[in-house]
Amino acid sequence: HRKGKKIASGCVFNDAVIAKNLHTTMLRFDVSVSGDFLNHVRADGYIVSTPTGSTAYAFSAGGPVVWPDVEALLVVPISAHALFARPLVVSRNSQVAIEVLASSPPAVLCLDGRRTIDLPPGVRVEVRLSDQSVALARLSRSSFADRLVEKFDLPVAGWRGDRG
Image (cartoon, rainbow, N blue to C red; front, side, top):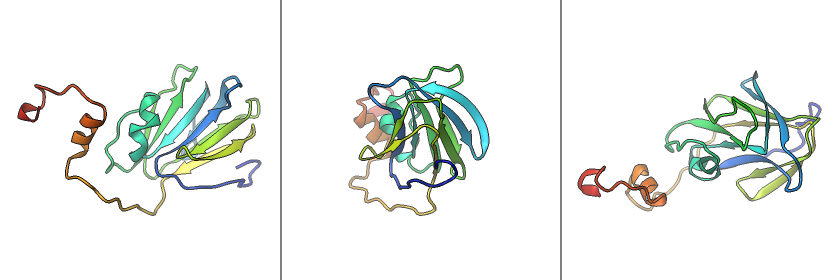
């Protein structure tokens, strides 16, 4: 949204990333959750992720791993320059609003790492979970924990009993 008008919209499966352009300085953000102002932050960007996207960019930026059956959003700052700029997990009913302040350089919004939208200063990005669900096909019977251990090559020998 810019000046109260919607300028773009889209759906994502994993994450929406607001980031600085390669050659600009830190961005300035105001962050709100469900209409309540939370923080003013200077950072390289913000990631708003679904649990499915939690093991990708959000995890790399310091966010938590969230099990896929948890209905929540993750809000993860990227290289923030603020004392209280920590990852948040908010409820499925929350609306996350991140405003790129007018005093900030231009930014870019990247949806699932594929679609990009240029963001001028003064724009407000609002993210919420959709009411629509997505059915996924499971190709193996392994649990999320087993897939996590394999994906990140976690050192679990001796900790998981005879599973190894």
